[in-house]
Every structure is written in structure tokens, then in C-alpha cells.
Image (tube, rainbow, N blue to C red; front, top):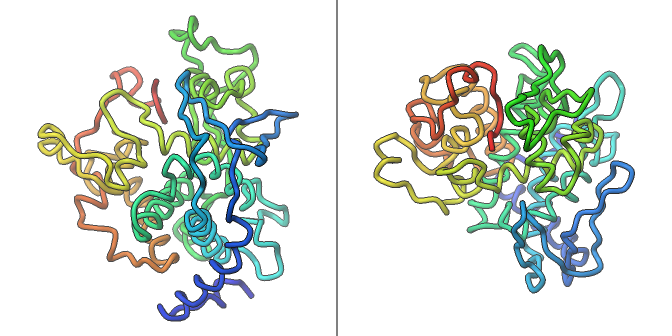
Length: 347
């Protein structure tokens, strides 16, 4: 028996369950302040919860010393994730376990997600706007990491949406993703391979170097840390989500929660705030501006799945031009020589 068979399906029962969980979580989160400084110890990331501090992002300080994490914000994020986790784990397993593969516990776990999210919640991750906006952002983020790590396929039990957060690395890399043109800024480390790793997979030496700098972890020399530490992998994905990664474009977070306003050029390029734009930001020409292709539709399907699963409903997804990037002009097209092989952010 699976837990998703026991989840309430009516709106009243779902609301009732949310209220019970909110009440039970409030004592754990009230008057709690987070130290946002990251510590690395034997490839593990710890967050010190004894004092307030700041997160240092690529040389810029974001002062958070006087900001409290609102109780309702923590509860809402935990609540959203509890419903998602409950739908994909076996009834006799801990809710920490996201997926089991061949009898082994998955790399991805609930605790790691929550620890990583404490860094980004004060910056707006899952805590911006009203309740619906917050839940839609979480659904959108889960849709991206679920679709990019899925080991499901069309005829798999439960369909492809039931198998997200499965892989944590590219399974059959055909190159080492070392770009020697960055040898003065992010030189490739001897023996290191920069194939895709993580919840939002990171490719290429320059991307590992840049994200490592921002997270204060030596990913350039040790890209393997991403596939060894789920908390760090989630942190890297959330960083990519909430940070504008390329010149002239917003973050996926800002596109999703309505912080970004399109210019006249954006409007002419059919770029509209919403889920479709997050695909444009994260994947560019790989999935956008090509019509309703399978790669794009798979990601959209995951988003609709999570909207339904979290009780929001797919009717909140928006019209086709908001939901997809089928007709959007990409922000920053790749150079011709890299168009076929470059993935992920480019700094």
C-alpha cells in the first residue's frame, strides 16, 4: 500500500489536513532564527541555527541579520513538501525517504531539501506573495528538479511524473565538459569531469566554478561533491532558481512570483511572466522557441502534476503562452559551436 492512496482528495479534507499540520509545526518554528553561513566539513554542509548572519553571494552581502523567518512561511514550505513526499513514498518508510531504487534508499531526501531551503526562504523561495503564489512556486521548482532527475518513462508504473528525484548525475556522459577557453578563470582540474550533476544539473567547468564560488564550496576541483551531498545539491539548484544567472534576464524565482515585468522587447519576443519563462531562463533554446516539443511538454506535465498533487489545481497554471515557452524567443542564444552541447547556466 502506498501513502498516496490514503491522501484526502476533497478540498475540505485537504484543508483540514493542512490546518492540523500547521498547528503541529508552529511550536517547532516560532522564534527561530537561522545562521545562513555555510560550513563545509568532510563534504557535509551544516547550518548553524544559533544566531542570525548573512549569505554571501558571489562577493555581495545580502544582509539578513535582522530578518526573521516567519513561522507561517516555514510551515507553508514544509507543508507543501509533506504532501509531495507523502505521495511518492511507501507507507512503511520514513517520510524522509523520497525514492527507493532497487531496495536502496535514494540519494535525495526530505531532510536535505528542508535544510537547504532555510538559506533561501528569507530570500523569497516559497515565501513570496500570497499562499497560492508560494505554492505555485514550490510546484514549479519541484517540476523542474523532478523532470531533470527522472528515471521514469512513458510506460513506467505511475508514469514519468512518479519517478522524479531519482538520478543525481548524468548516467552516460560522452565528454568531460571541460572548456579550455576558461583556463584563466575556471581551469579544469586534473582528473575532474564536469558532466551533469544535481537536482538542476550543472554542466561545464565554468558553471561548477561559478556556483562553487557563490556557495563557498570548491566545486571546480571537486565537482563530485554535488553527487555526494544531497543538501549541497539542493542548495545549488535553489541558487540557480533564485539568482539571475545571465545578463539581461531575471531569475526563475522572479519570473514565477511576478517580480519581473516584461519590457516592450520581451512582449514582442512573447516572453510572459509564468512557468514558461522559467524554462526559457533555465534551458533556453534546448526546449524553448521550438513549438510544443516533447522535452518542453515533459516539464510542463510535471508542473501540472504537482499543482494537482498540492491541491492548487492545474487550472491555476495559466494560458498556453504563460504555461509554455513554445513561442518564446530565448533570452541568450548559445554561440553556434556550443548550441548542441551546452547545457545549464553560462556565466
